[in-house]
Amino acid sequence: MVKQSKAYSGTRPKVMNIKEVADYLGVHTSTIYKHAQRGTIPAFKIGSDWRFSEKHINLWIDEKMKNKNKS
Image (cartoon, rainbow, N blue to C red):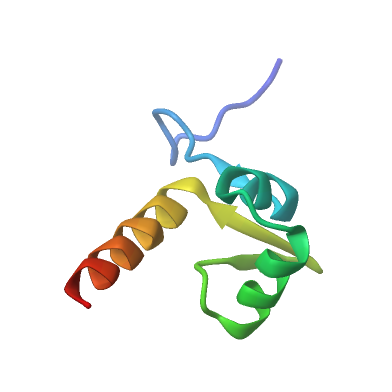
């Protein structure tokens, strides 16, 4: 029998790896890796692997678009 956590209910947020984010944004994986290391893209590490919340990536894109439109 699988024990379920009582602390979490609902759908889980989508978490992506570097390749998935690169594909999503249409850029090379090295570009995403550099941005993650510099802290210019919302990311977090699990062990030595970078992970990205789809929600936070979308918010980051929205913010970039707002700033672009202000210029």
